[in-house]
Image (cartoon, rainbow, N blue to C red; front, top):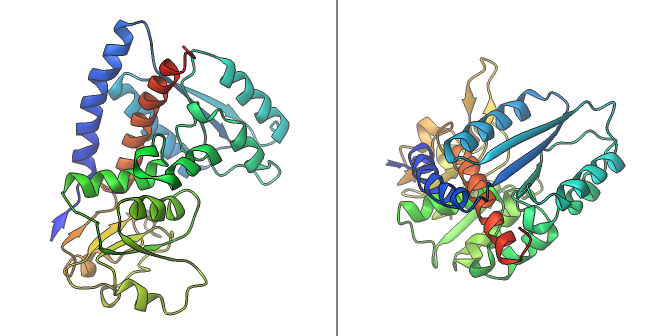
Length: 288
């Protein structure tokens, strides 16, 4: 069994990005990421902290706009994003999800200029990801992180049976598209899937993104499968763990991601890459 080491690859990406960002600064272009946060959700604060640390490593400028749920509305966030869209010094805009129930998230998200959509969540960028591998310019960061890990460890998905468990717009659906773009045969499972184990046992490559501790057990995994655990959960003792029973599944897998230390770190690294890509796209479009 070989660990798919997200920490090691993320650090490599940060080193390469720092050189590229320094090059832009020599041209008086300073890539800048602005994150909008509503509320004090501990998980969101933790994610944002990791993004800020990554920005420091790469030389990307970072700003957090924080609002209380009581003061914010859909219209207010749309107005703020419209302002950021027009601001040439802002190259990446990220709205930290989830938003409060009284805010209509789809309207907020679609306001983001696609060229500044570093999360890759707008219909424009998701649609481009659907077309072909060559159009994955600002792809969603979590599935992009998975692809980068597979590529780093020279795991060829062409013709392989891939199963994705979890059908979210953030991870599962774009993961399906990106695996399909690389000519894998893909099955996607979700909460209504019957006989989940029958699907997962067929997988040469199993990607799990649900948010349920030990959802995938050893008897659900094919011998020698590549297992990618996207889930991040916290046990009653406060320990971070994924969706896969790592201790037992790792005995059957050929490759497996740890949690923590796997996809989560790659998600943040790919976000920083997207900020750089977005900046370059804005230069090419004459926006800067």
